[in-house]
Image 1 (cartoon, rainbow, N blue to C red):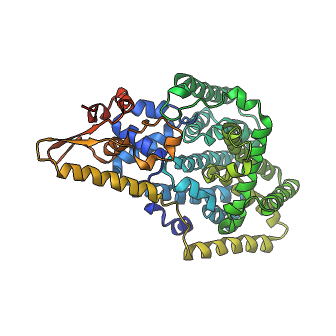
Image 2: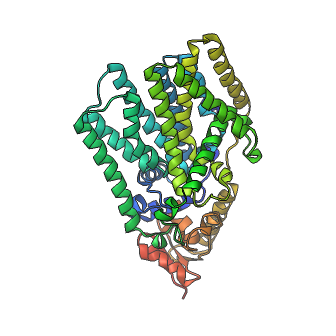
Image 3: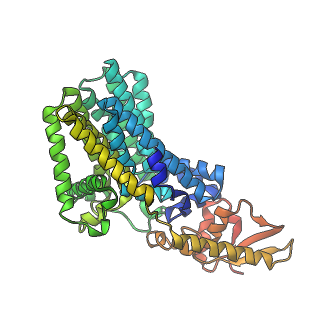
Length: 477
């Protein structure tokens, strides 16, 4: 946890990016129902959006506060990974070293430096808690109760609705928990598991049907149908393999991992080394260690499989580039870090000093590098500067208007949404009027009502969703 805090100490300097503005606009505008249930790029992000909404209600539009929460969550996750590893392996030194290596992974920048991706950290937190209960049941040699099954169902919901990658993990968890325990739960628990998986699947498909893609605010074009995606199994499998290779290579290399140098020979050598380590541990380990190792590797694969299903069609031509999208690695990489801790604990019995000293040396070397030079964040300077210009324009217009009169500002596109607007309808985010909604709690400033004049008729479509924007945005006289 301390290493995470030190290495990622620049995180509170981050800023909003792309989806962040759209999400906060929907919160501030009062469109909470659609925000919680309307799919985004086929993701159902109910829990993630609820978290961002709570942060907005608590802190307002202060990005630093959002990133402080993300930093705290990452520190907690580092501790939870260590604690779970220690419980499973009974090797505190190996667990500490592996947890340190994981919290310092450079791929976490994709999750931690983008508020909309903080759901990945929430997935890991929930998964650590659920696996901790599986480990506790193993220690007590008891079967999961109905209470466990119901609580895990809640955890599966959180995981599935925190980001799209979580759907694969959530659907796989009941089966993998059985693999780890090595025994079947009672018929009633199995029935609850089946019902929970059916509810998740039915809920997901229902929301996709209620919000057809061409009519959502997130995508102006029709995404490939699920049948079309499944008709390209080769692309899906290839992308899953590429994600696995990139995830394990970045975990091993730490700050020496260079995405711009991929693919290289290392992206083959490092995964081969890990697979060899896992296979050797399966051969030498106890039955419990084998089950844990297999279950953790499968959970990592389930996370990557969820991404591959959603993105395989899109990245079929260049799967390696797609696999370098860092935000998809946070939770799957954690599972493989845990699997590696289990494997090292197996080898530790044969060469205890060599394994412990090697793991500790790797962790200390990474820590020294990152204590001296923190991990570079994505500053999103363009978005910050665009927001500052929009806010300055609003304040200037207010200062020119006498008190008691209405301030009229010509609405224009918001440059901070330039990236996301490539994939949305032009006015899905209603320009600098949307910035006003996010950063100003009231529609009056200094006794002056503020109104934005639509420069195009299409802008007025934003008022059809209701909320504050319906009175803020007015047609051109």
